[in-house]
Length: 131
Image 1: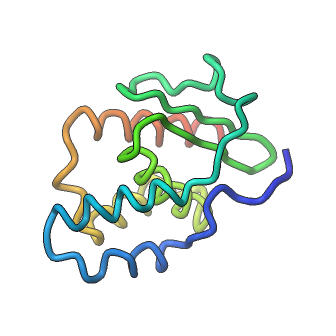
Image 2 (image 1 turned 90 degrees about the vertical axis):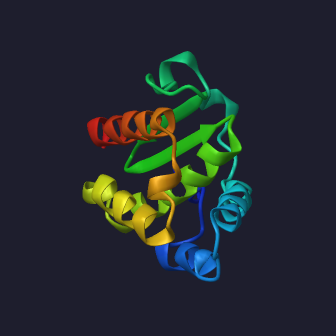
Image 3 (image 1 turned 60 degrees about the vertical axis):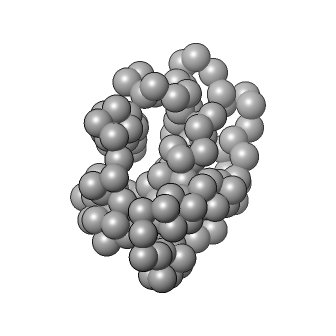
């Protein structure tokens, strides 16, 4: 697998999209808009084997040759995956820490449900295990 990254945005560009958000609704809208940025995952990788366990939504994760492909059927999760991929691209070894710090900075951390947080944890643990 040698292809262009699924996300062309870096963390600073993502932060810039949220800088003028005053309310949770505005942040939520930005998250939905971010979901449209996630490039498609080839259907050959959307297999049962690549489904992340512990997520309510379907999340597929494939890692090979230091490249991470990830997708979901849920828009909010896709928006969060864009942030996660940008964190992975910046510092793969510290994706979980960078992601948590970025969610805090964007004002998203305290608005995610327990089940979403559990799913995010499952995704981050899978990334750490595979990379």
